[in-house]
Structures are given as C-alpha cells and as structure tokens.
Length: 391
Figure 1 (cartoon, helix red, strand yellow):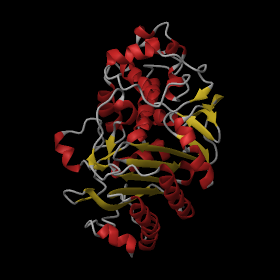
Figure 2 (spheres, rainbow, N blue to C red; figure 1 turned 30 degrees about the vertical axis):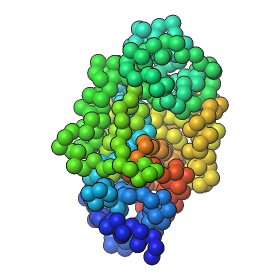
Figure 3 (cartoon, rainbow, N blue to C red; figure 1 turned 60 degrees about the vertical axis):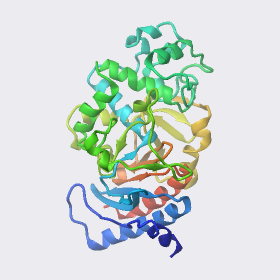
Figure 4 (tube, rainbow, N blue to C red; figure 1 turned 45 degrees about the vertical axis):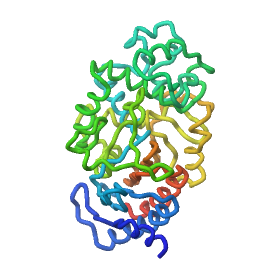
C-alpha cells in the first residue's frame, strides 16, 4: 500500500494501456499474468528510487505489451505513455553499431579499416593503429570513459586524437569509452558521405520502422519529450557535447524501442541490407570476463544467473580496463544468447535485453538515472518469468 500511495501522491497513473505490435490477439489470462509480473516488479523499484515515470515494454512470441507508470513531467503532471520520448543514454550505442554494420554491408567501410582512411589528419597517430573494429568494441588501447572537458568541437577532437597515447596495444583490453564509440560513429558518417545524425535519422530509423526516434527532436515532437530528474529532483535534459549523438544522444519511445528489439529478435522480417546489418551486430568479437563484446550489444549464454549478469554490467566493467581475448573467427550466436545494453544520462536511465531463441525481450525507460544493478535485477526477474510463457 505504501508503494502505490507514493506513486498516487504524484497523481501518477499505474498501467495506462496494454497493446500489441503487431496486432495479434492475446488470451486475457496471458495478458493479465504478464501485467501482474511487471506491476509487481516495477512498483517497488519506482518507490525505492523515487522515479517519476517509467515506460516498460515486453515482447514475447512477436507480440508486444506496454506498461506505463507515473509522469513524464512532475511540473505538468503529464502521464507516461508508450509514445513518451526518453533519453536512451548509451543504449544509443547499439544504433551506432547498426549504422556501422549497415555501412559495411553496403561496402562503404570495412571494420578492418583504420581511421585515417576517412580522416587523413590521423595518419601516423597512435589512434590510427587501431582498426574501426577496435573503436567499436572499446579495445583501441585505453581511451577514457569521457573526452576531456576542453574538447568541445571537431578541431579540438582531431587534436585530441592526434596526441592521445595508449596504455595497451589495440585488442589487448576493453575499456568502455564514449570517445571510442564516438570516433567509430563519426567515421561511419564520413564513410557514408553524411553527418552521423543525418545518416541515422534518414536511413536507419526509417528502415527499421521507427517513427518516433530522434537525435534532434523536432519541435512538433517536443510535447512528447519527458523531463529527466537528477538526484535533487530538478528537471534536466541532455546537453550537447563532443560525440553526444554517436555515444548517448538518441531519444526514443517504448513503442519504437520494442520494435527495434523485435527486429533484433527476428531480422528476417527486414529488407536487405538492413537484415544483414542487424545480424552483423550479433557477432561476438572479444571475450571479456564472462561477457562477449559485440558491436553495441553485450552477450551472455542464456539462461543466465543474476550474479553473472550483474558482473557483466558492474562498475568494474564500465569504469576500468579489462583484459580482452579476440575471438577469431567472430563468435556467431549459437543456442540461447542474451543480448543487453544499459544507458544513462543525468536525468534518465534505460535498459534493454532480449533472447532471440526464446523470442522474449524487455525495454525499460525511466526519467531518472537510478542504479544499474536495480535495473538488471528487475529485468532479470521479468525475463525469467516470461521465458516459460513463450511458445
């Protein structure tokens, strides 16, 4: 009772709607059971971490259900829906990976290329010893989590990479890095003779059927853009920065994101070359502890224990360098594999996970950056209960 009183005190709505993508009928008892699973998991989570609003989407056997909680704006008391725009944070990296894979399928680039093929200014630099694959898997040799604050434009970005000094050979270690994936995405845009944002918004989103996903939110869609809330519950949104679009800049909805998950679960429904592009992001290139690093997505054998999933998404994995072992040839998912990715900005927290062989997946979008372990625990609980329901 205390949990729901806290939510209701904000005039938050509990379950706003359940609907299906594609439109396939659900047995009433199935829908009610899933609703109960999600409600039981999300209510306590929101109460514990004082989360104003969340949009949850699950997919099972090609069907999607939406569960919407709380508000997109405390100030305006706007209810969350599956069309509310949330900042994806680093879940954006899975789209950057998809764009690069798409460019490779088109023959516009190769993951074996080096940056100077597209940025001659980097010829002879240490960063140019890394391949595009190294950049896309955070294994270039020790690029930091964030670029220095003084790097704020392309000229400074080029100067930064020209003088950067590695602390390991390319491929020896994985160090999660926005500059690494950022340069990867930037080069991909150059290979496509486009800006990264234009390529994403005019090629990738439309081909995936994503009608409400943006790097640059248009004025007409601002009404759907949630406010994020920081630790002091002050409204915030992401601010521009070097490689923001490539690393953490996408805003999307639960409806679009579950469609993206469904495309990853069953890429056969996509047209060429997008189908091959999606499949390319499912290859595993480096073994890092108990996790396999692909392009964008991180991979684990399924079923998976909560402890193993938490370890793969731990502070150690995010903030520190970890030894990496190159997988040659790249690992093709076999049997059951769980793919996942977390994402955060100052005011938002996201988590996406799916198991193609089980045809199950989950999208969690929140307008507060609450702890990653809490997201993992709740998603793991929900997926464990969805698995036996898949046909």
